[in-house]
Length: 369
Image (cartoon, rainbow, N blue to C red; front, side, top):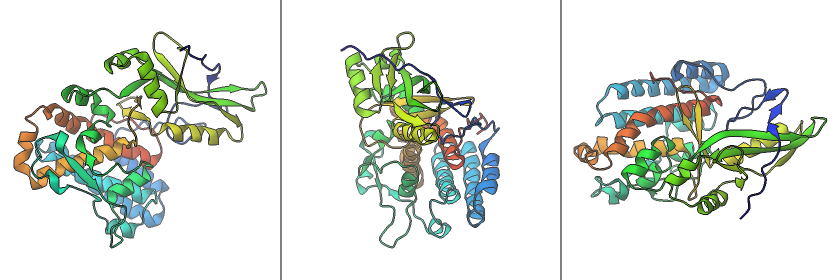
């Protein structure tokens, strides 16, 4: 099938500023990137400067708790760290829900985990492929708030189908996807976005035009997925807003969204609409000096990376807390690499993902986290 021609335009701009690719709200005249040395101090500053006085103190306390657990986890052994990291995540989630006014302080004070171990896990802790977690409703029968479903709601991600497969959760985390696919013999479903950009074609007067998003996917990623080009193209087009078009450079596969008509007054609204469409399928890998984006093409419903990391850390923490004698056996099997990679990489990703949700900025992490 012949590819349609790619749209002719230029890097999108507004108010004289080129729009850097990001899934965050548009901030014209600013980069949206915060050159911070570490996240905790910046989060304290942001909460003091931006949170309502009624939530500022509680959000700060949750943040302090999260940092304390994180520092303890960094120096703990591998068979203790998961529980400490989970409590760090729990308090950071509460900080986010408080600072963003998603939930009341009273509700957060009486909140429950909102996620638990199904009884059927008792005999199968040693195989990740057999494990599941249960996710509860946002409110229990006594109207207590449940943190995990509240977090999913705040992140605009649907609750996963019940019960949630641990193996499926791991498959939705881009930072360990290579280890996951290699160790567990899975087909890759994350594809590197090369030169992702927002594009526009303006009328001669510059006051209106069309706006769209363009990405290229690396050919090597498609080869790794063992998909023919037609199957790869069908997978992308059936599960994302992108449609294939003629390549821009080299042999990478180019995809574009539909074009949105705009005027200067509606530009920001149309840009937000595109970002909302991209959020379920474009996921960031946060690196020390940059963001790298990956396109997820596969089954739905999707789950936000932060929610997937949170849920898997809960699972590991529950083993450490209730079945510590089984944890060593878990990490001695073929899952060892995946679990070790998760514990090494994903805490940084979760902290920075949540920091960026709280502050609505793109902030890369530093090695000291």
